[in-house]
Image 1: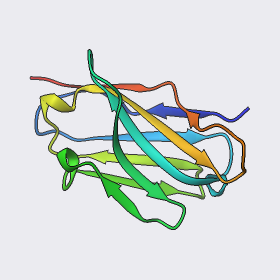
Image 2: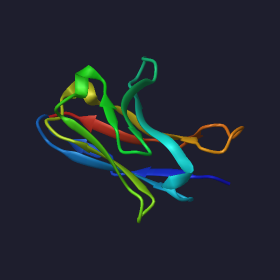
Image 3: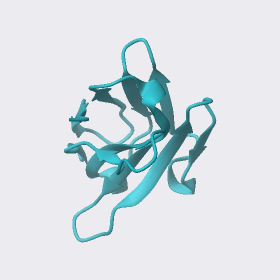
Length: 118
């Protein structure tokens, strides 16, 4: 069973930083693209950042310049470095990955709560 497990969430003051981790039970090479999503209370889940197997990254406009997605294949871990956090960044953050193997559904983690508040 493929698993993704997020960690690193918590309570942080506005302007602070957090680094989220997503540990994979299998090699990151097995994923052709990986994502960070977030879902705030009462809102739909939204895509935050994307990284391809080749290392290309993209970000939603609201987090550009503040968030950075990265992957460490040696540790089978995906990261999201979040700086200059704002109250509107408060959400449950999820990692997800699309498999190279055809026919496999995307994998999702259980989510980690990030709360930005003074």
